[in-house]
Image (cartoon, rainbow, N blue to C red; front, side, top):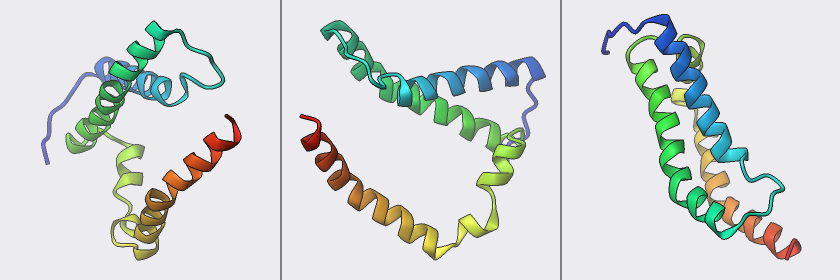
Length: 107
């Protein structure tokens, strides 16, 4: 584990920026029509920005400053729980089918 201490202001600013960017990537297009320019910007930047938000969570958890988030992600029952693994596998395998059926109804 890396023990690197960051000032409280840096941690708070990092959490606010990372949460804002990640939530904007997930919910930014909810019920909204885009122009071509907006769609180009969103599609080119959303995955990178989402990855930066997740990278911040990983950084603070590895450096020992994750607090509640680190304790939730380090929860022992999530580590070796087979039902959780099965749930993740079923969500990833059935998610595409759900998306296809959703978009076929809305077209």
